[in-house]
Image (cartoon, rainbow, N blue to C red; front, side, top):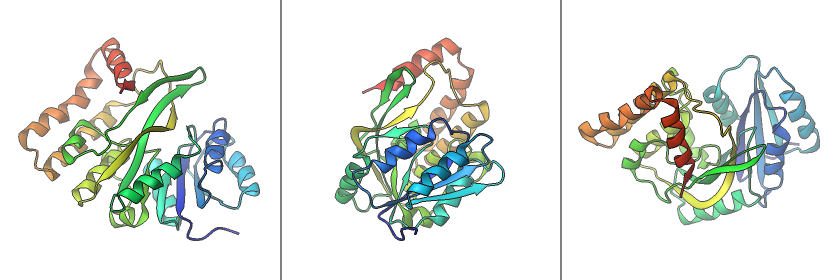
Length: 270
């Protein structure tokens, strides 16, 4: 029987992640906070993702499975999960990542200090099959102007109030927010008067390719620039907004070795 009105609804869009999904699900099952439901939507996978998730569901009634007949993308898939959620808080999780057992406990503790917040998140590390190779320590209390520099929160490690997400209409499904749906959400959240906070501890670990130059296409870089322009307008940042908006486009144009050096430095930011 499904648990109704849990403290936390965890939402995940799962796409072709059968190999890594067991570890991701286990990370939620091992949380010190057990009052949660886990809504997993298979976004039209062509591998065994659905079968793997179904096996876990058979043994844990807190897991709720949804399925898209075709691949809809993360924005629409997360909105589908959100519509099915009943928890007071919404937590994110990706199908190829892991998090510490006390992630929810520590994020809820920070929420208790800032109950008005729209989002609480954490610092994170980056890993592959060889181990951890980088980290990102986010500012404890990002200000509106900080959003001109890009997303200030680990999206996959975030905990959010469901009522605020619903007030904002969930994730934008516009083509202008593809691959930057989280960044767009933070800007809209801050523009509505809400704020966010980050634990300084690393509670989330993202599986990544240390040899990858960039996962971002030119279109996603353009989308990032559009979000920056919207942020500048919302927060009254004036003409300097255009300088920040050019940065993502320059990243696409710069030589690969330059980007690789800069990316490595960013992943080891303290």
